Image (cartoon, rainbow, N blue to C red; front, side, top):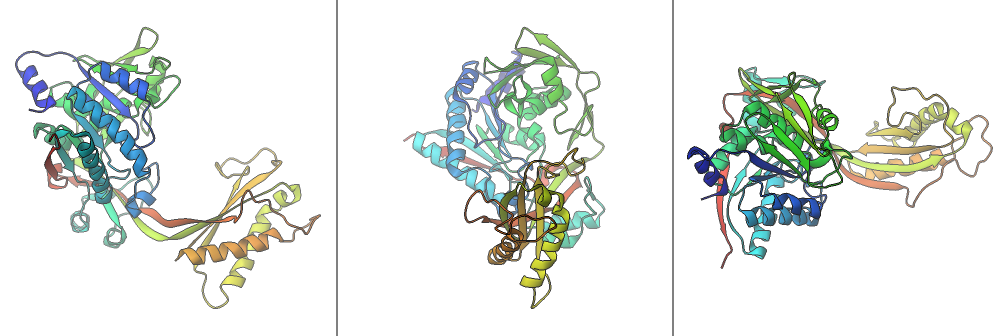
Length: 468
């Protein structure tokens, strides 16, 4: 019997108690500090959860089917959390496998887990939950009026769906609950709401949904909610009235202010957390210090949604990128930069497109002047600027070819007051033109109404036994 089913059986027998949830990593593959994780294991948590993915890394990993972390890094972290969970026999729950949570990412993560199990002679029941949504299912939902855009996206069309290399949906906590009830010791899910990783188990034990989801929203980032923020493991202790947070690193403190601030993390509305199955209302939440390093949180309420919505994410290939990295410290060049770059763009096009239409995009990024926040005018001209000029074209050779011409003519571009013809640019390394690989963009970023999640997120079980 799995650790969760034993725990559930104990609760049903009247042995109800607070439960402990260990958030081991905000994103697997970048390293898990060992001292804090070991301290967390020593507290005997009832589950270990890890988020492994995000859209913060951009669309390339989803579109290209690659992990954002190295295979070695992923294996190192997976080994640590898997061995820890099996040693104390509690569920290990991993969401958004392999960075983006599509089929290739899930396969790669499962392959690594099987390798570790074999090397360490482990035995456990593994559940894998796919998150890929078939183009046909999405197109059907479009026709039925069940898809709407998010943020600034335009309405989704069938052509967008067909152009995407991978389309995933974020599953909610319900699918993690299905796997737990199926006796899984280890759960690895494709693209998932980060809250689902941590909230599914306590809600199966009848802890309040609002508290469980609020807890999950905070601990999925490990000790990022602490002062100073970090990636060390965090322990949440949940009872029927609230939960207490403590970083497993003694040099980090979960304070009322830092925890309250993190409750706003990635939320457009400071009083709401939106999930596929409903909304968490934070208007009555209180944060109280427990000593110098812990905070107790209570008051979150859950409001079920009239219908479930799952977020769709899809990416399509748009070409190949190369970048030119250079800088300039001439105040005359800096003052004339806009005219120089406009003239350069026209000149390069006349040179590399003599035999046809323009077949690339050339995009300059000027750091020191609007490179990060172009909407805020600079108060004064900087002493120097850094330039990253990107070219996106149909293939890698074309992108590099355009950038080589761009570099050469920007290097010697004339402008009013120029003092030297030897060159306008400084290069940090050679060659200054760097191939950056295939480029993808999000073209599916929409909400789809569903009746139930089980239709879209299949759970597969596998018995691993390498004990002999």
